[in-house]
Length: 382
Image (cartoon, rainbow, N blue to C red; front, side, top):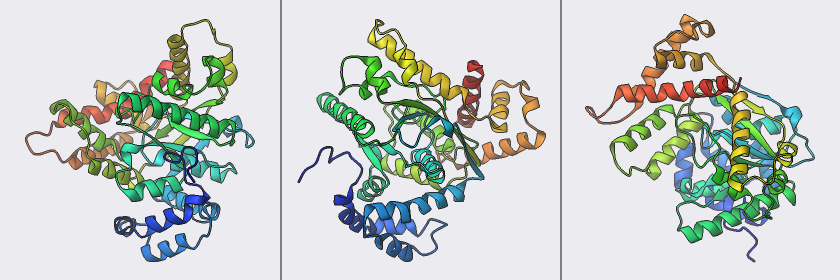
């Protein structure tokens, strides 16, 4: 029997057995498992996953340890501040800046698990579900689907359905939701909340903008990576878009971004959970035009995210290299400078644009901006 939101929701118990069977019998998925360093025996891993009779037991016995292993594999440290701002008995809408397709929420849910909270459900664009096994895998991991790339009429219907799903999850099921503040990652790390995201959230509700948004318990979430393993891929995409009109990443590019983000080294990663904005939103002037209200709320989310970035030596080094100054020289050592310059050169070397077409000066500038922009935005909030 068809249920509400069947085509976008996370998998439920009724989907579990079929999804597990299709996932763990997919040759491409099994081939991928054999390439992951912390999985020495893919067949044994498969048998372990299939041994859990229910979705709940699979989440607790397989997914939680999996998230922990993935996080330990590619980080030197994961930290979080602001946990005192959330209650275990309440559901929140985490609105976050976005660095990595997969790991942003893997790391968040690892933090929540370790601190006794239930994991969030995660929004993921259907443009990333380029293989059947990817959809099965992410929906088993509590991801729900955001439909993109459809016609105007279909997009309105899809946005209304998505809005209704999120409202139902938070208000009726008591389920926390994670969403990026914008569609896709900010490739240059200049994080800004899109009004269109806020409009979507209230599309299925009443006419009072402030009451509808406040009822979702929006909570800004700021995340900071010491190293972004996908920085060179983002820089390559920027040059391709500059040089080729209408350039779009291929499904293979998306898969490479996901795998690089999962397995690549991130160094230190920090999350900050700010206070819920509901009361502040309700105190805003309801007589303002809707677009002005949404922009005011977007600006408030941005200010929180920017203010709570965790700065690393890389950010200060990148800002000085970009400006050709030593304005932040007291924030890093000579070793920090050498380490980041060496890292930068290695990342540029990875970019596979044909000889003669590779604009190394442009690529270098774009990677530097990725690390300098968070510092610039952070300082503007102080």
